[in-house]
Amino acid sequence: MISIFSPSNYAPFNIALEEYIFTNFKQNCFLLYINEPCIIVGRFQNTLAEINYQWVQDNKIPVVRRLTGGGTVFHDLGNLNFSFLMQNEKDEAGGFAKYTAPILEVLNELGVPAILQGRNDLTIKGLKFSGNAKMVQNGKTLQHGTILFDSNVDSLAQALKANPLKFTDKAVKSVRARVTNVSDYLSETMKINEFVGLVRDKIHLLYPDAQDYALTIDDREHVQALVSSKYDTWDWNFGKSPQYNLANVIRSASGTIEFYLDVANGIITSLRIFGDFFSSRDISVLEEAFSGVPHTRESVRKIWQESDYRAFFGEVDLQDLVNGML
Image (cartoon, rainbow, N blue to C red; front, side, top):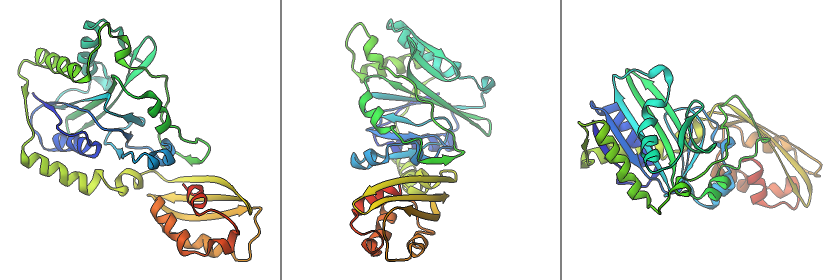
């Protein structure tokens, strides 16, 4: 086994690194990484339905879709992420116990009463501090999880404060749970890098053949190429969302404006606009202008800017129109 502590805090790089290792390395690997504030979305989720999009935009938070299923999570510099990328190992009937056990051992030895609860959550006194996900493919297993060590829980709550009434879809939904930080249960103050050292020492103890590995220049170039082509793109992070419908309403000086969108593969396929506003123009012209447009803030704003929207709605703010469709 090789043990890697990622040199990067950039979420698209670290999620791409997991795929690069999973696809190309021939040996077992244990990977640790810490991301700057970001949101990581499950493989089969509707990204926009999982996040507080306005807050994410305002705070310039990267949103990245991972390879595995499960729910959406918030990462920051107080959150440690671990991955086991294993060759030709049994799936343990889909269980998560095997690869969460080292983390639990470290915590229990520190006096923290952490346990595996339910299918894939690690908890302390009933509060969740770690969610885990898994993928098995071509005889390989990728299992990874988060560890809320000293994370900003308030930011977590804001980032994932999505409006459940706006979207209708069949995508996998995240199950929100009350969360806690590991640091709250430690008898002595500990920095996250000290905790990283304990986890890596545990892996070396449990896997005596484990060797520390530093990414080569070639490794980094391949990972960066994957970042550029996939994990830093709208097509993967938002466009891969399952088909969904969005319904939203805004209130302006001219009256109420209701938006109803159908979106497939991240592209607006239809838009209907209703409301109690007065318009001197045919609304269907405006509706048709959005057909085939990517469901992104930039694309939606561009269409509104190119249209004479005040001729349709009177006194209405451009930003409100954009927000109404996202």
